[in-house]
Amino acid sequence: MKLTSFPIIQQHTRRSFMTKGLRAGLLCGMAPYVKAATPTKYRTALIGCGWWGMNILREAMAADRAKVVGLSDVYERPLLVSQDEVNQLTGDTPNIYKDYRELLKKERPEIVIIATPDHWHALPCIDALKMGAHVYVEKPTSHTINESRSMLHAAEAANRAVQVGLHRRIGPHHRSGMDFLRSGQVGKIGMVKMFITGGGSGPESPSPHGKAPTGMDWDMWCGPAPLRPYCQKLTPGGWRNFLDYANGTLGDWGVHWLDQLLWWTEEKYPKSIYSTGGRPISGPAVFSNEMGSTTDAPDTQTVTYDFESFTAIWEHRKYGGSAQEKHRLGAYFYGTKGVFHMGWRDGWTFHPKDKSKREIHEDPQFDNERDGHNITPLWKDFLDAADNGGSTVANMEVAHRSSVLPMLGMISYKLGRSIQWDGSSESFPRDSEAQALLSRNYRKPWSYPNL
Ligand SMILES: NC(=O)c1ccc[n+]([C@@H]2O[C@H](COP(=O)([O-])OP(=O)(O)OC[C@H]3O[C@@H](n4cnc5c(N)ncnc54)[C@H](O)[C@@H]3O)[C@@H](O)[C@H]2O)c1
Image (cartoon, rainbow, N blue to C red; front, side):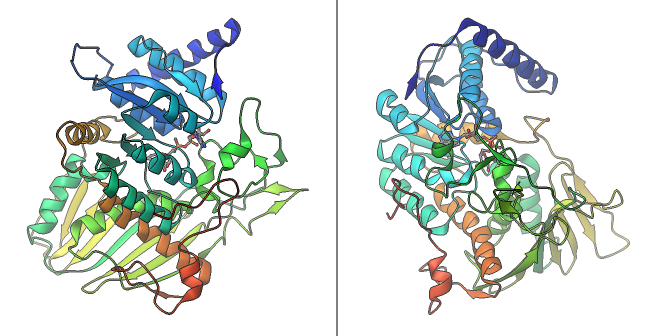
């Protein structure tokens, strides 16, 4: 469905909303958009105009290589706000669509950015690649392992630039930290622990079910995933903690740190995985017509990944953070010469074993201080690959392997036992129960991608 006309009054609301957002961005250090004359502009489209999608689109506009031709969202409000912002920044008025398939067909974009919730990454990504577009898709690649595998196969067949939003692959302190780890100064590393702690503090109350807001196509929002009743906790953003649509904190945050792990090691996958956890603080998940819904992802989870030459552990708890904690998230690499911490806003730090040696530390540098990311160089890397061929730092192969790790953790968590993984065939030999969780049933009329 293509949206065409809107009453003037709505446009006023849109403009003032956008102006506030833009001003906040500028105050927080976001680079102002400067239009410069450049010969080549890619016909660019965004699918999923929420918080992060617009962060990426702003980078695309700031790089001045994008003519934004189309925007798609199942909810009219972000669509209109985004259309207005694009118009303010570039003078272009992209067409807006509630159905991304129509956008792809009508606009034939050369670059497609996908920043929908995780259950909605695979199909638009594969469709855009098949159409011949370069694709920037958000992390994690997908919601189930076989979707991600199909995305990888689609990327291989399309031979187009693909960047997945694992921006920590290009952040300056992550790069120098990796050099430090590889320099041997941490010694031989036998264990890596990745973690995030803190947040909510008590039992979770359900939100009532109700009608989706006017202008939101709720059936399309759920798409191939189960059609749950709408509740306010789900969107925007809250879908991360509903297992029908995402993989909880492990899928959302874990993928960034598990990606750092795979960047560091030469091993490609673990051989066995064991996860445990639950909701000891949030309480049992609620899903009932009378009471409504709580989230259902674990508030407490550990995953042990056995690699050939080291052990890796993921740990999250959404409580119990302490002001005294030196590092609240990141990855500890434990070596024979000390402990190296790769962090986010706290940069990286090496704590030597030898007391006579001084701690070594590097601060982070962000292009966007407010959201703490380095999308600017990630986008440039993507454009370089689109212009000249060649690969990107977070290409589909790299991102597929990193995204598989949280999904493996969730399979073990759901089964309540350890699982043995054959990474070369991406299967669980002689384990039909685990094998069944590599995919899931799609709700009609959507078909599970089997490339
Ligand atoms: N790389 C990072 O550091 C980073 C940070 C934040 C978010 N993300 C990723 O970005 C994605 C979006 O996250 P968010 O926080 O912006 O979520 P959000 O809920 O704020 O926005 C998602 C938007 O997608 C829309 N949508 C849902 N189904 C759609 C469909 N079929 N077609 C078009 N639009 C659809 C929703 O209406 C919503 O406006 C997620 O995959 C998330 O993991 C990445």
